[in-house]
Image (tube, rainbow over all chains, first blue to last red; front, side, top):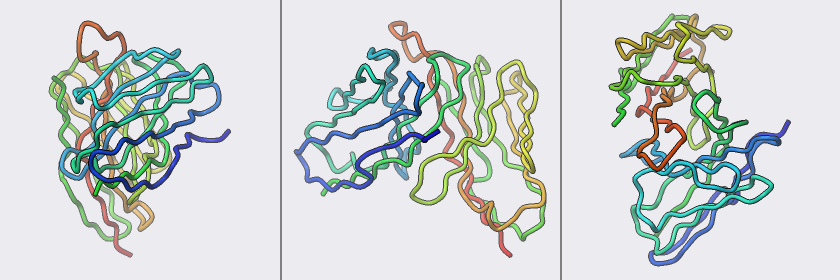
Length: 114
Length: 118
């Protein structure tokens, strides 16, 4: 079974631009979560989607948004990019949403904002 | 607000040693705890998942324990090898961040960077 895939793997943008990252979960998984990883803050939860609905959200500004499609694929969007948005963005999927499910992570998208 | 701390931040050992990585969390009302491994520039690989009702889980040379009441977990690695060199992350699944939300949140520690020398 293929793992979680994320595209693109690397991205370079300039301040003020917007960016869209894509995540395809493991086949059959319906929950997708997004995380931001930086050297200073570590891994921080952005949001979770299940059945095309946002079920949980972390403490990030409204510039960070996401959506999930009927095939469970998910995208996250960051508008008006800032230098501090440079990070590794990780996507994780699990079979169901809820407390007891193991999460499986993709390789990440490395975003650099210049 | 759940906070997860991992000690030590970095660890360097010679090959063959047994070692223990520590993880502590502030809110004991967790659903589960997961240990991950991350190689430089890569995503996370799940190592072990311990449900809140369990005390430990084992996989090969790895053993993870959970003491929910004291807010602690340990990851024991037996007979370490150079291929074990990576950053090890502990994450706890706990209640949602706000009343609007129904699903749990995974909170990560900052990790322990392990180097095993041949």
